[in-house]
Length: 410
Image (tube, rainbow, N blue to C red; front, side, top):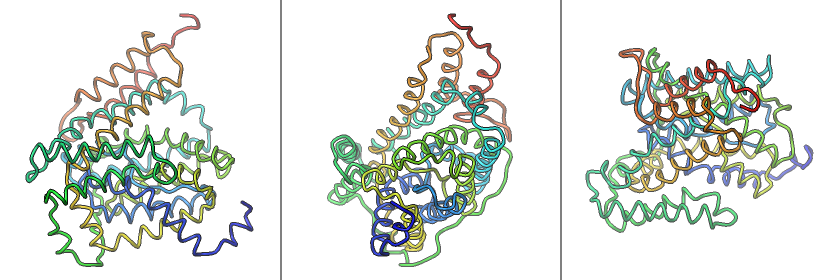
């Protein structure tokens, strides 16, 4: 599509296509705040605001939509439990500045140093830890352990029905249906929950139609910042893959124009702005990339429209209240697939690298990342505790840096 043609598109088409892009992203967008205890209305607002920031930095050249990042679910849950929501937002702002720092290093030095610092043997198992560390949470939600008013039998039935519909749409769906498996699973589980009488509509009845989202200002604590900063490493590396993926769809090289440094900067500032208002970190959405592939909607203006619609919906407080009535087992069923798929992405990163995982050096790096990250190892205490994904990432980077590399033919 030429620049002139894209400018001449009728507004009804632009509005409709933008709304469709938001619909595709909606299920995953609200899933993160619902799992971490954040406000879904705030997440809608910060997804829209973050997307607008990204397009301002990249000058509307990349057709992507930014919203809640799955990679931060476990760290947000752990940080909120230890430090509270406000301090967690301060840590997430710092994580956003890590993106900004990486973007400037890429601008000055290129990407070779990034590949040396964060090879597949580090990034792959760190991504696996992000998914696998959450497995017990997914199972406890799916079995109703986190829901006081839902018995085991009802919880298992609802969660497995949600899971079944999600995987059927993901595997067998065609066209738009294949892009919205999470929405399909949530809708199915919610309808079953309604039929079984386990949905409480009191929050919806008490909510006003329109109100300002429950924004939370960040506060800054060293412990929360140290806890969150290393988590930014894996999503920052994944960002490069996202840019290559959308570029292969539109047949443009976004690593050159607008440049990887600009897209990373946009992503980092979008995450920082999200944390400033109390929302989850932002990342580019592969669901929307899939929708772009299907519809051939390459005009970045569609994403700007989707962002504006998201911001408007954030002020419809009955929508936010309705989202919070979704029972835990509905989310739990989908989480079992979602968190497993995150681990598979990490495994695929290792496989595609083509290195021998039984080579002593690789064996040590991968093993310690997995066991430290999943097993709950922690170092330090008080304000300077390192554990989980943060500890695993730092251990992996340090080992990769210090251990001698195998010689050719060893």
